[in-house]
Length: 413
Image (cartoon, rainbow, N blue to C red; front, side, top):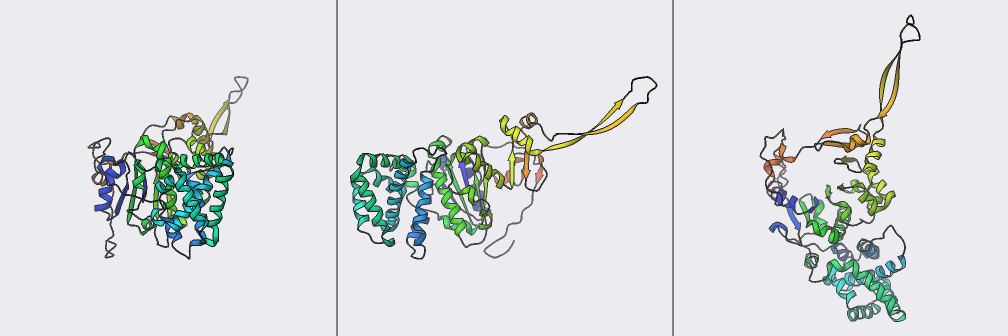
């Protein structure tokens, strides 16, 4: 399981349970040291380093570099100034490819920043690239291209460098993320073994500025799980989904991911955030591929109107009476059917705090109840104190569940 954890609440409440009761290897990516939780490191470039070191996989190296760079510097909906973005990405691709092939021990995001930020180091790297004959000479070709740009139009090349540095700035050496992404205490390739829980803990006030790091880690984790030959599934619970950056290729691969062992729960505050990040077409694709959609606390009139239309109509039978024109006329009676919205937009916006609307594929819409976890036993007993909000109410459980845990080491229950 991989969980984005704004405020570090989920790790604080459930990490001990998953480690002690479920026997999970628990890792917490926690650059800011929230709540005294463990601080594990993850190098998002570990997949790239592994590919570069395996001759059987090196043919896919340049494609992998392109994917990572596109995640670092995603394409916005506004396609203007693409020339400058591609110039910046070209520098990033060259540096990343050089580090993966020629200096794998230094292949980290802070090292990328150092090389691009320092013109002398960048020049030395370009000179070294031009002497390399690996990968069919592609490194040498990239080095020649960068050297030409630096000599032909240094001002334009400086603009390209500035763009690249802007998108690597959160990994600048000395910052909170620098050490956290410079090595790996957990391998993303191990996620599919079924025995790993990874929390990605971030302070809420850093999500907007540093959330792209979460997006890169999640992108690489999904890639690692999809490529793994191990059996099993990995659940990605992605809270604050709209603030972790645009996940390259996610919408296009949603239909294939379940068959590769990837399950994704996306949590957004407003559907408008999804549209803002991915554009209306891709946002619609993401929604259409979801097996379950859960709505509560709907505040957007546009979303309420859309949901009302999607829910369709119900048939209402009306009995009509015709008294005629004269007292002696017989009373006429007729039955008519009219269509009315299953739920009007205003009814959706007025749902009680304990209500939710569930739309499940091939199932009629469900108007369900929402209940806090502390009404469920044994969940309430398993959860530790919330490190942000304190202990939960001491109330009588309304639902009791029973579990059987399998001892995987001995095959027992």
